[in-house]
Length: 280
Length: 268
Image (cartoon, rainbow over all chains, first blue to last red; front, side, top):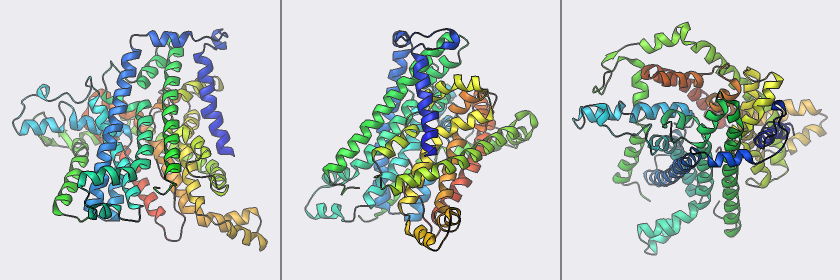
């Protein structure tokens, strides 16, 4: 298959070259001995641990936020039943928005001179931009998280809504007839039905946000930054000695996201074999 | 569950909150000036657009690069993905199985490490800082989506049509041209249009392999945001959004074409 070959050469080959170079194999620079020195160096850098923490924090919060708002969105879609046409319109409205554009939108909305700050000033709550909450380029990466949640919650909502719609029997009504309360119905009927869809969507959201680049570049602080931005800065640094560190960092991102993808896949398979695939 | 007024209201409030970021994006490009406390532009005007249209802004070449890259990448991805998607589907490999997972991996795992690895080789081959090198790099995240989408199309495909044509004496090309292609064309187009969107949105791969020499619209957007001119950034963001929405609209229309095999596969 030519597609498989292309992917193996470009993706697999690229990864293999990156691995070789990160282990110190740079024939062009006269280095041919393999060592883990670069990894030791990277792990001992003062910038590394804050960047790892910041990346885990933003990716984790964005995933949890997308899942919660996505499930809420799916329930609202089911409850309000706006019709299939409107639902698919809603589902697709932000699909084609590139993350770079999404970041610009969040900047114009939440920045200290953004639209919300202007509305707050119009209501007389604040007088100057600096009085508004710091939501972009902030130490907690809130602007970054908001952008991801804004993009991904729709994806989660639509996956979850489709999973609910695919179930023929109205288990919810049955549970209601049996006297289950709203919360009880949610935790013991709706959530179990949604589990496969949520595992799949959550895995994709976490893997994407863990390695993404342009959103923290546009909405983040310079320090701490995400691993992907740190790796990029190392790679394009004038000092060529930084390049192996960049490669090591990017391979670390690859390892984490690959492991998350594998875990998600295994979890979905296990769930499917437990339930005999009825919930799909 | 019944649609009570409360639920309806909550639904529309949710939609409104979620649509909020679009508001400043559509206001800023038409602001001649917009001083701080004003909730709407102080002076309306076309300052941003006249700058974007001036040769100094280099929007024309960037638009051309973005369009040509996305078109070429999607055509090549569809040509490469066609046999792969067919094999995945007709070999009855289960969706969610290992083969699918291997194909999806390059779409899930960020392409940064692969791009770093390729960069040195691309430099040696003269592909770095070149349109062709960037196009090759874009294939890494694009191809998986195309293959999985086409596998979804072929999952609903009945090979017996081809066998009938063969019995009637149709050769390989004739079978493809008159039997297979008409059946899968809408799904093929949808896969290509999604590929277009992914290439159109690329930032990191273009930046790395293009090295600043291959300027696309997202590259200009980064520069405009860094310049701090909100009107320019918002106007260029609209230029990026326009074709993206057009492409998605086309894909939606094609996917609903009657009697055609749409993409049954889920788009991540």
